[in-house]
Length: 101
Image (cartoon, rainbow, N blue to C red; front, side, top):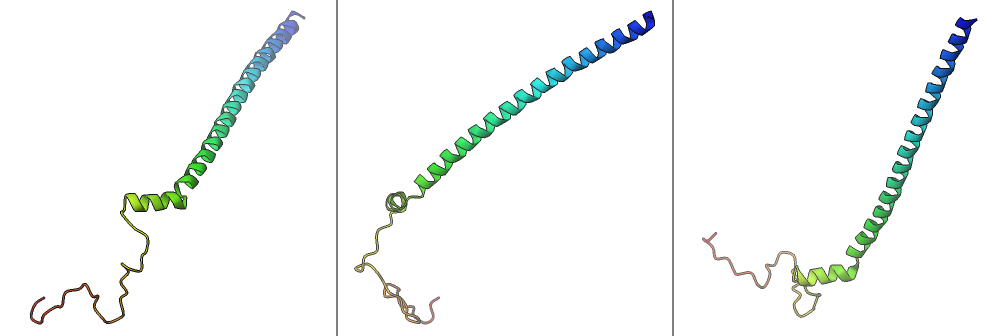
């Protein structure tokens, strides 16, 4: 009878240790999932902010401003427009004399 009681005691202790270990793993995995969800929310928020910044950078007013300031471009004006016809050299091109490259 004592052997049976000792075997049952060992079985109860083993199952108790297993239960504690399982609960610990469950809590650890739950906190890992919670951290992953928090990071996913943070990344989604950052993605939305980057999309807004991308749209702000691509506005036509900003592109016009950069073209004017940094590239020193100016709007089209018929007074400074040169039209090139096929086969004819542009008016600003210097004539090339024969014998000179």
